Image (cartoon, rainbow, N blue to C red; front, top):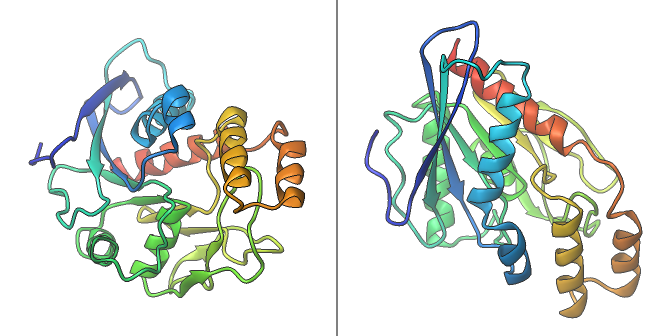
Length: 252
């Protein structure tokens, strides 16, 4: 595997498939650190996505009795880091969510956007984007990204920035009253969602509480979120779609 940035780590899970001897390296680009209550109870974003995708790959109906397919996860911290990972031995890239603005002019965000553009267009790597990652992907491919005048969206979403239009060649997967572009798809290259498949009821409760306490959410938005925090959602289905997208791109 190519060189990793400082503080990066790797973990592997073995599953099996009808296709023998396939190794999949998924690089997780960590774009933020969760608030302390979430970090303490549920771990960081690398831990969340690694656990989610481990289960998602196994949930594809692939037996785990042999080791025909090996999935490796590596962690890459992006915040205030202008270096990018070596893509030579990477099969797929996932960008996490973040409290930062994807449209901001910070050097690391501009560098990340440029590097993601090259990953998709030059290196032809499949890239998955979650929330902030969805917005970075859209920006990298030429779409407009900015603050949403319709305000915050809710469970299992928590964002006030949006993608205004789908990039050329990408399909817009879904819309909502507050957000026209909820997801993007380009076969074997781009898959992104504005929501958070990695969030569960406990994580959402922590985030609602924190943002209500600091005044970011008013009472109405906070209480509305709490009333629905335990509702069923499609996070697990989305996770399996992500795993299938990565697998299909690898065995093309």
